Length: 87
Image 1: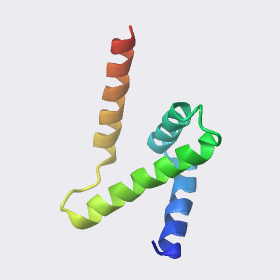
Image 2: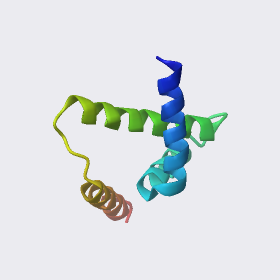
Image 3: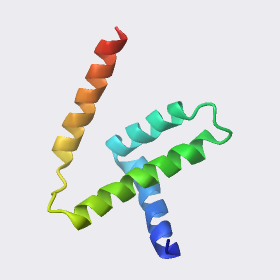
Image 4: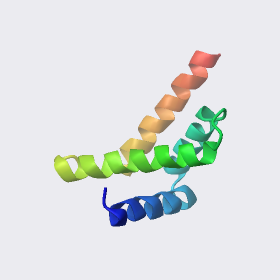
């Protein structure tokens, strides 16, 4: 893969963790998932970058439109399902 693309994905992920609650929640979830990994923060960061890459690719190759409200609603629904399943 092109070094410039990788750098753009890296920079995008750094900014996303700081500014986006959805991306920050995904990063924290992956950080928890990789708790036994030697470097869990690196593995979680790579997972976030990969997730963002898949989103960008889907937006570029299909007619799907990015809707932040739908994304947040789906995230909150998943959290609610996890809470009810755990109880």
